[in-house]
Length: 572
Length: 41
Ligand code: HEM
Ligand SMILES: [Cu+2]
Image 1: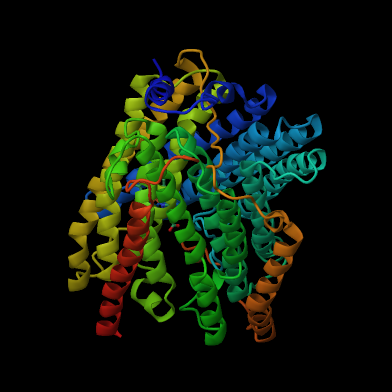
Image 2: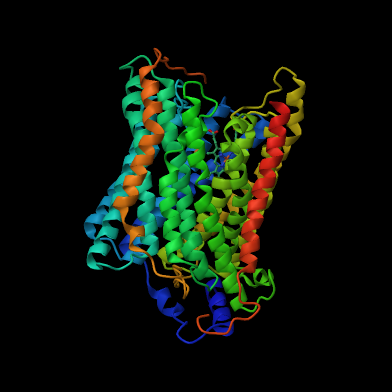
């Protein structure tokens, strides 16, 4: 018996006024079979990246504990590059493109043959790029970490490979946008399906943001690594990178928000609190994701304090849609919990389907996002940034946000998405294994991330191999926290193994059947959606204006005062 | 939900408290770090 069925039985028993057993009909709306194949191709790559990248993570915490040394002369920074690239760039981009494709196909309808062909072209470009970049890392020609900062210089094939990944993702995003545009043409004057709309917002944000890194790679890193030019403007390259890099984290996060807003309400048998609120928050994320990259460069000389301050202020605007999202989620939970008979101020909380991994695992992610977000506000607080800059606190921070909130939501989605695509079901055994993995993740991350936060406040640097720093007293304070990280990291790796086990089962071994792609309806009284929220021209103009305000002068300043630049370094 | 009577349990009080709870967590963490910052710099 599947959990989905168990859940439905509960719904049948305890709920619901007439007309609500739409559930059965809804379940039959499936992602087109050919689209499913393309989406699944993404899942293979994403979860392979999880396994290999996770193994690298395990090795890192072992090395940093001081009790273990890498064999065969493998370098720490080589492993760390594998970890950052595979988990930060590859796992995320592949999962996102596969998930968004399935979401568009499910809610706006199957892709046309041309659109699907574009999807496959994009997929293969990304894959060729991934293999090229990975080969260079394995050959020890590119231990430059996933941010590939100049003046560290990798083999040009590494940069070209990453550029192919970005170009491939553009083409895939384009095919999703084309399907959405087609829907709007065929349904003039109607509000578009929310999931398709959200996928389009994320793709647009991605286009605008990745222009920065595309320019950096094409005009700076490639000519320089090919030896066509000798020197590179380091500050310019970092500024272009972070113009892209902060939006990158929202590119990861928005698909998780798609699941939170649209999928989770259906999984718990409830409704979306408000369609308009969801769309507005996505548009605000679109606006405030890009003109804020300088908050990663707050300690950097060469950017005037005024522009740092301006971008810090713009950064803080992102708190608005974040708390809107939190509010909307709580409201969905509370309405549903009360419907099920929860009483009092918090009684509804107990009524939620805690045994359903499609809910529990993303829920753990949501909880992690609270300290993650709070830590982020500390990071962004201009002068206070120097408290934590380049310390392991930062690593602790983004293992709560990307490596817990985001990835646990992705995993929770994979537990229904993969069987939906393969025509199998999540059995109750797999469901409880999935829950176990979620809980292990929570425990492991609490230990690892907690230790990273504290050690960071004590001054421990990030991106650093084990060292006693010449027997320094301060460094001695960190070692017990590094041990704690090794314990937490080991628990995390076990969790990854369990998740891979569940995914393998869902791909090839689970019983044939039907698993629902949950899409929530809007609650009655949720209000109608103002058309302005779908007017991309208006939001596009505001976005471009904000970017110009935030970046024109700093870039001009960097260009007009640029020093001779730096030659390449290979320190590994 | 649509047309039944409002009862004392038909509200979003929990949501209100929870959202403000997040705000308070943020402020407390920020204040602790600010304190550390002032001590050091
Ligand atoms: C078994 C689970 C994991 C362990 C043990 C682990 C451990 C670590 C450690 C110790 C570092 C910092 C090393 C240093 O700064 O010297 C690190 C960095 C990083 N991790 Fe993880 N991690 C895990 C899972 C993940 C996941 C799931 C993601 C993302 C989806 C992720 C993304 C990253 C990124 C982007 C970096 C930064 C790399 C860099 O600074 O260049 N990690 N991880
Ligand atoms: Cu940022």
